[in-house]
Length: 113
Length: 112
Image (cartoon, each protein chain N blue to C red):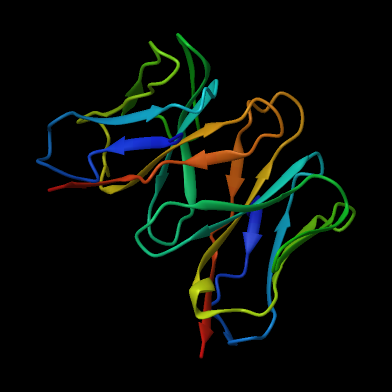
């Protein structure tokens, strides 16, 4: 079983719709959770992070964390063609993990006009 | 203008040659990381450093070496012992709290 799993997609949504990206993780001791956006040929850009159970909203983005189910998701409201990218889920283990992040494979999102 | 710089953007080398990738940050971050990204495989940790003059192997350190002589700089050398060096190399640094990592623009290395 992979440590961090994402559906590779591609996920295709129409412009203006809500895009829902999902991520599961295997380490119950994980403490911190991150979403990165990566445009083709570019480096990952941090767009959201969440540490506590529940929802965290930032503009059109909402991160949702459920530690009991070992599940983190990213919702993108009013999706735009410029949101088309690969979204990487990253998880930081607890304890003395030197800040190591474990990344999922990424989900390719396509927003079509 | 704070950030992380990597150079060069593209690098081409012949097999058997060592090559050094540069990573510099002016964010005053203590921790720095090197990752490798291959198509369809996500990011994998090569080396990390939490403070100057100290660094640790990550998950795929074989064939790589690093140094951390200054807080701002964390160069990565890809040696001839690395069997599949062609990849996208990403340097990151981390804030002291929270743990968010920020990436540089990356270096795309092609070895033929």
